[in-house]
Image: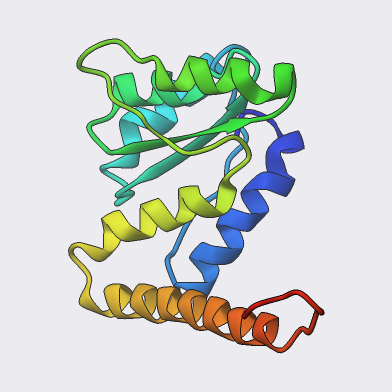
Length: 160
């Protein structure tokens, strides 16, 4: 994350990764304020066994792109709403130059960043794939239950 003020958004990602039993690390690194530490992190991530990186940042949001420029690992950019309703961060992350790709999720979409990371990791991990399938089945069951509960609500002119 670009700063610890992003932690409430990243907590959703951390909770999901923990639920899926995926080891992860959390760091506060700024592309603008700690560029040497960002470079060290990015260049050493793969040798340390990191497989996917979620990089969250607001405003100019250079962190995901800078990391992507320094590692062959997939980078998921998570724009944080800190100014301009997060549109500045979204555009900064999604508009990468050719050859430096960053997968991007919605503004403040920490959970989706973690889901995408788990989907990538699950390609080579059948046990993780099963846990992800169970999670997604639970989402479906939740909606089916909610729809059944809606059917029980009565109104004079409701037709279903």
